[in-house]
Length: 218
Ligand code: C5P
Image (tube, rainbow, N blue to C red):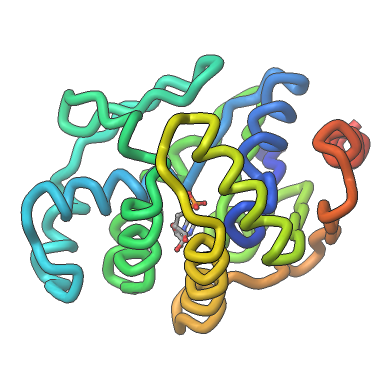
């Protein structure tokens, strides 16, 4: 029997990270935060001073970059041996990630890195195309969404709590722009994967969402 996978896809700020991490902990499965792979690439590209239009250079960086993940209480990521965790969550990183993620060549390079996370006893994978492209044969699929307004509010609170300066109106615009870019791109667009259960978290607590997700698996 193949290694069980629970995929949790959806737009940014729907609560996928919190829910996926909690589900992985409860199930005692591995956890793949696929967004952090694209975010790490974006950081590497920005650090190298490479333009976000320079596909050849970006593909080269994606092939060469060495990533190490430590999925403890807090996700820690090292890029070529250097801890980049504090830069992962910024809006600059997120926006650049969504630009580099739109290149099919880049996605092809990063596909196997993601598939490698499928290890016993199981995997919770969070992203945009987990159930549609990376693990289409996943046994359990969720599409987690929420209104753009609610997602912007949550992101704003997260950033303020982390001491990062934020502007709600700008975040709302960026979320809408990122939704549009992620949904309209030609390769692996954000979509409800075949067979996925849709959960709208706009008026649910995190606990309620986690319970709904876990009850799918158990
Ligand atoms: O989920 P997160 O906000 O960390 O993802 C950052 C960006 O990476 C997304 O806006 C999206 O463009 C891209 N991404 C993707 N496919 C995934 C995960 C993230 O294209 N599976």
